[in-house]
Image (tube, rainbow, N blue to C red; front, side, top):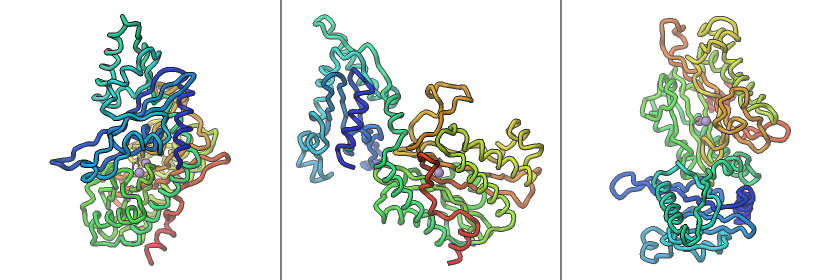
Length: 439
Ligand code: GLY
Ligand code: MN
Ligand code: MN
């Protein structure tokens, strides 16, 4: 990605703003314990517009006839750089990242109070970070106090995310390229996990294989905490304990994806610990796989956001009836929602820089509660397709199905003619999984 692409995104945003000032801070560093910090991750919006990954940085944009992009960042500091490494400093940052101007972060309040003066609108992610909200609102009040000297504060505060989320929802070719690469690393990690898995190991040992594959391909961070869930643990949707011993006869559900170049991948595969599906496991698995195929088939441009979900639901509902988990007709099961006992989540979400990426799912914004207004899918959107089935022990459930938890998740990019499954290379048919695990 060259700096031009970031500059083009800023230019597009400035055009959408029409007038006013935008303030986009990056993420804070967060202490974990003692002198130790969580691994730093920049704010996705900030990065999308800047390409700049240092902490303590703020992007300021001024829209209008002569639009401007400014960066506030840490100054060079030879002493700190001995300890923590290179910092660009404003001059080099301006030049390398193509800003119109750059200033030391210490000057932010003073400069921002000046820059806000007489701007009609302030675009800002209000409500995202309480400390920033307080600081920004205080600055606006300070500007307002200058009213007698003829300076006006922005009347209007607008959520910049309304503009940015729509931009981020449609991935450009560079973004799709990075997402393909992230997906490729994650698919090879899932293959590696399948080949490594055998009874007697611990879930965390399989997790270590995933992490090894991510890191050794340059993806040093996961996009989210890996779920490595065997047996009954697979029925806990957000299981992250990853410390149980793998038993022959159990399934292993792995939901894991790396982050590469600030973009997420998100894959789930479920396979037998001993390399061979039992008859009951296979019965449930084939239903989830068929539901996923139906959902992927429905992930096409022009179809509504919930078309894949509805396609998956119909297949699952029929499957649950066949397995005697639900009774009645498919329509009745969908209507009375008895399927929710075994499939309680939705079939996917947007995917991008954030694993649950930004973008409205309905036309007219997130406030739209009308179920019929799901937005149409468009080329450049990337979503996950991840149906599942989670069967907890209960008297009215056939015993052979107890503790079977299955999810199959792929990352799907909508194209002009249909879709591209970015994570195709991770095996998911019974035959392909058993074949890989045999070797
Ligand atoms: N791994 C998070 C999700 O599947 O949504
Ligand atoms: Mn997932
Ligand atoms: Mn997901």
